[in-house]
Amino acid sequence: MKNNDWKDRLNIVYSTNPDFKYDNGEEEEVETLDKKQQKLRVSIEKKGRGGKTVTVITGFIGNENNLKDLGKLLKIKCGVGGSVKDGEILIQGEFRQRIIDLLKAEGYTQTK
Image 1 (spheres, helix red, strand yellow):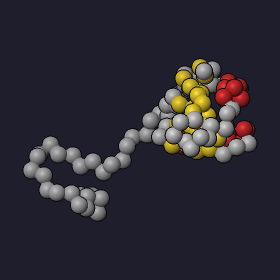
Image 2 (cartoon, one colour):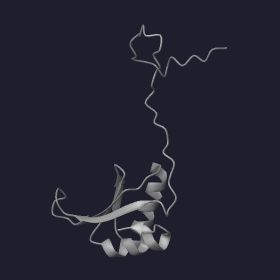
Image 3 (tube, rainbow, N blue to C red):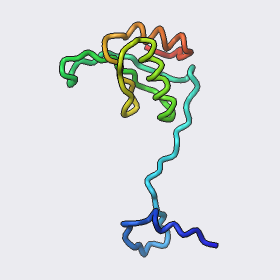
Image 4 (cartoon, helix red, strand yellow):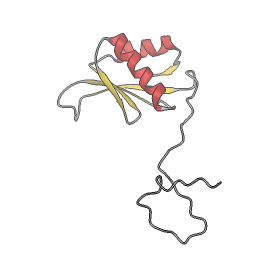
């Protein structure tokens, strides 16, 4: 029996291309690298943030859930707020050295 997925294809115009493959917008999950292979960069930013100082962690390669877990851990350990968006972890305040120490303690050896 053929799988009828017409509800997934609503608003799609008919295509005469025989090689056409419908893309439903789902992206493949990126596999998370080992902690020792992650090259995380910690920096301080102030521009575009209303004068507030933010510590930014970039360079994480992996799925969104692991990034959110790492962000949650750092926010709890620093005792401040923050967010995770666009593959970056934003921590409110200037905690560069403390975050580097926390990441190295967690096993992220290639942290600067």
